[in-house]
Image (cartoon, one colour):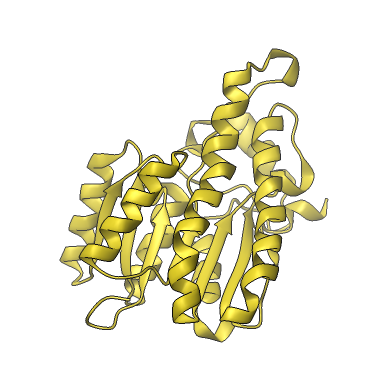
Length: 249
């Protein structure tokens, strides 16, 4: 929490797509929003300018969340400059898609380290103060691919399934300290990344969604907003699929 009483939310991978939607939603609700980025410095500056134009507050930190030392340094700076993080939204993730027979070890390790090991580094860095404050919200962004699997995405699916098992374990460890840990599993979400997919593939994906449309970053952000709120304090260790019913098929 900041010195003026604002809750601090840290959103990793918060400069684009789902992460940006989450960051904007939490800023709208009065959080001091810190966005983490690895490469998108221009986008981070644009987002901070957007916050300022709306009278909102936040900051941006460059950090490779797959690296424990960089994560520890980021949290040290945040605590020195602003205060302790109340809400962690672990959203950073990458893909290196290919069939397992063609997958190089580097593609496996890159995805696991960025998508899953980063969650370990982040939660380890944030939990001590959350436990002292007897309040905290840990929200990890997984994927329905972590629930269903997907050909050509074994590394990604493994990382997203790992997030689910990890968060369920964390929930059991910290629930008695006023901390909740939950998972959101998005389905097919319209972002700048999915916009690059062939139209045929996008149309095929939407055919499998009972709601009949792709999701939006706002759809995910709305659920994050609820899980971050004090009123969600009895929701613990859950996986919430925000997918328009796609995982039902």
